[in-house]
Amino acid sequence: MPLIDASGRPLRSLRVSVTDRCNIRCAYCMPEQEYVWLPRHDLLSFEEIERLARVFTTLGVDRVRLTGGEPLLRRNLPDLVSRLASIESLADLALTTNGVLLAPRAADLKRAGLTRVTVSLDTLHADRFRALTRFDAHAQVLAGVAAARETFGTLKLDTVLLRGVNDDEILPMVEYARAHDAEVRFIEYMDVGGATRWSATQVVSREDILAVLRERFGSVEPIVERSSAPAERFRLRDGTTVGIVASTTAPFCRTCDRGRLTADGMWLQCLYATAGLDLRGPLRAGATDADLGALVAQRWTARTDHGAEDRLALHQRTALIPAEELRRNVHLEMHTRGG
Image (tube, rainbow, N blue to C red; front, side, top):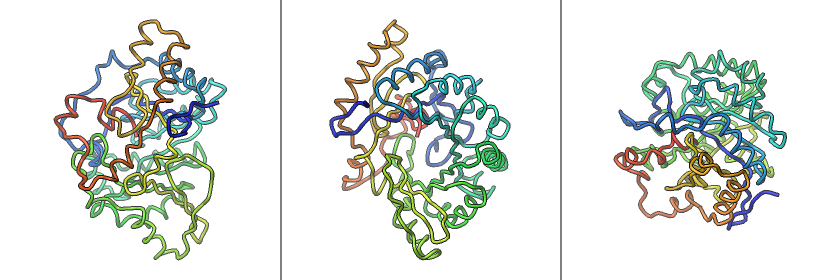
């Protein structure tokens, strides 16, 4: 049985950041010019990640997603995938990537036991990609999407919408996803971690997205399903499915069953949390699996986090954390804790 927190939410999903490094600089995640990085000797080894994952599965976790930073920057990542895939109680082992390095590595990841892939794709235009990320790698991302489709059969595409930047690509992205056997998930611009230039005026809301879809397709039918996934799913008149992650304007805190493990072993129970539980310290000090499980259980059962709902209730809402504070505490960064 999974652990239950103070609000009745089970612990079922673990997102594991394998590195805080990234090879692009998306405007909504890493808009600053310089960053402070985790010391490399602090990063968990694959053996340590596997051990912690096994501890979490004894407490009810049955889904693991590898994130970053950009997870494909971690050397020999298929070795970690193979280790995690050997955990019999895991029902799903997925990866979220920006796609830049995916094309030559998709087959190895699949052979190692990876179940699913999600690729971040915020625009179909190379010039916009350069403006959004400060890197010229759009062609590599599209090649990664093609490789994921060929290797895994299907995939998800994550598109963060920013008003005045790429909000005119909602319909083209739906068409692109359909052509690549993918499901696009439109994500509201979130005021978390490194979003130091966040503004409510740039948020393209769930209702804005649905209005565009209804104007084009007419009927947009909600898909009713028992799921704690962050995306609400909708079926268009032609049968296409679309997801919307509305964590800014319509938070789903009441069903959140996710914890996040940073690359250096800090476990966070909420994306908006300002502090976490250090698991690397006890792990390297000789704690047993039972000791580690007890630490996790104690923290989760006391969990009361409703971070996105608390943010929504604010009368005046600005960026969550100023840049100078992020430089002092790298664990507050979105690229450190994973999305």
